Image 1 (tube, rainbow, N blue to C red):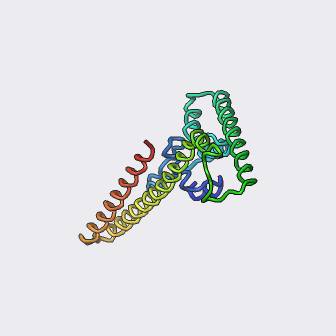
Image 2 (image 1 turned 180 degrees about the vertical axis):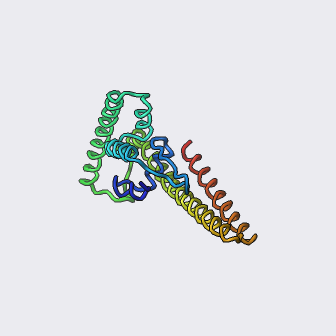
Image 3 (image 1 turned 60 degrees about the vertical axis):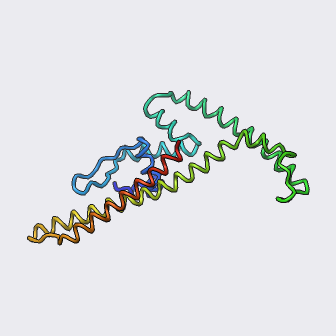
Length: 204
C-alpha cells in the first residue's frame, strides 16, 4: 500500500504517519524500483494501535517504550491513570476559578491574577502550557520538513526516471540541467537542515 492508501484506510494524516516512522514505531519497506515506502497490513495494524493509544492521550514516547517492551501494559496504564487523575484535579480547580470569575465583574483591564491565585495555577499548569506551545511549533516545523522530503523524493524519482529514458534513447541531460537540479536539491537539503536545527532547539 502507498502512504495515501494507508492514510485513507486508517484515518491518520500523512504527516503523522511520517512522524511515527521517525519515532521508530513504524518501519515500512522501500520499493526497489523508486525507493517509495510500501506499507503492509502489519504496518496498518500498528497504526491502528497507535491511533487508539493516542486517542487515550498516551504519549508517543510511552507507546515506543511499550512496543520495545521496556514497560508492561499494566504499568503504563496505571501511570496514565495517575496522570489523568492529576489533570482532572487541575481542570476542576480551573473550572472553579473560571466560575468565580464569571460571577465577578471582571474585565481584562481590571483583572488581578493575585486575587484568583493565578500564580498557583501557573506553577501547576504553566509547564504544560509552555510544553504544548513548543509541541505545536515542533509539529509545524516537522510538517514543513516532511514537505521538503516529499519534494526531494519526487524530484529524485522524476530526474532518475527521465535520465533512464534519455539514456535508452541515446541522449544525455544538458550540463546546465544537471547543475540546476543539483542546486535545487542542495538548496532543499540546506533548508531541511535549518528546520531540523530549529526542531532540535525546541526539543531541548
